[in-house]
Image (cartoon, rainbow, N blue to C red; front, side, top):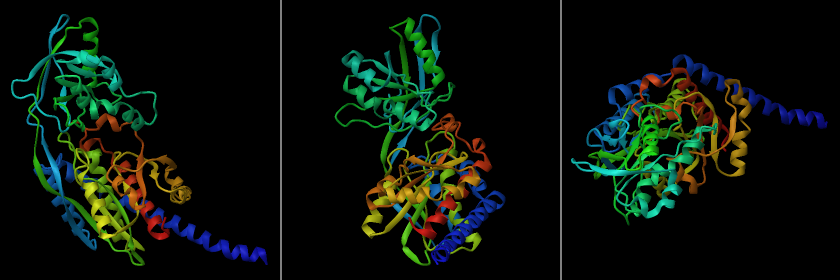
Length: 453
């Protein structure tokens, strides 16, 4: 009798797992044969281009993704207003070593960091002081007064997780100018955050301290960082000329773009899946984060094409202003809380359109255990990594509302070759890897909307 009861209990579980496995295979097969993620990304990159918040291109991207989701027949597509900062680069930057005893005058490849103030049209000249990270600056203190601080801490090449290496060196970019201004520096140069030694400077966000002057902050390519460092070793009075015209203008009205398929059984339970629609103003924002946006839209498109009715409500969200303000993610969470919406999960793709390895997550032990319990359903697709902590910047503001926060976790080895550079263009995205990520996200959304979490 016990054996019969056990079998009666076990059989439905086996059938459910088999059904899930078959549907996940349908998702992957469909996306890899009839996916539209790659073509949608091509249009975003080639017809619109880079999309910094407040720019005409960002506005065009809002309209494009709205019309795209409407064309797919989602139940609801709407714009969520959000005020965003409007920073402009103001033309090409210039940097030059002026007095090298070995090489004479030498041009350097630089890009202003996000939100940086400009030098003005005449530029500035200063002696250069090299430091390794914020701690290196603090050891010198007032010795950097009147000088250009050159932050030259590299990403740690021994760390296999390149996002961990990025995090370890990111402090000098994010707060280097603010910290250097405390000691009277006139500007900062920051080594680009990549393990590759090349000619591409990497921009990225940096924040000022309102109690100190806002000094110009520029990234320097890793190749020229190596050159500048070698010149400084033999000549302590090395001088560099910097000129950039970037500035912050008045805030601009923009939008998060949201598409929704209403749940059939528990519509009040929401699963949000998305990426950030803005990008830096160089390159085309292909991996960062056009890929994530198009993958999120594809999740809902697959549901429509399959004729599936989700039990819970699905939302594709294009967040605005992740790069230099996070206003879109903050506004989305604020509105959700004010409306009393119940998000059970939020999934973000913002680590590039590379081959998916798994999912990072943050949440309760029960939520993360449930996520891990689905691992075997993904291993046939070489997706196996479910123990990575994390989530995503735009979904982070939802944390105190209780959902599990999940990030698509692709292979990270090539991401920082392109991150925040002119090299982040459509051509460096592999179609199959992009589609595998879209299918993985759809499969996970399917499991969550079917079983909850």
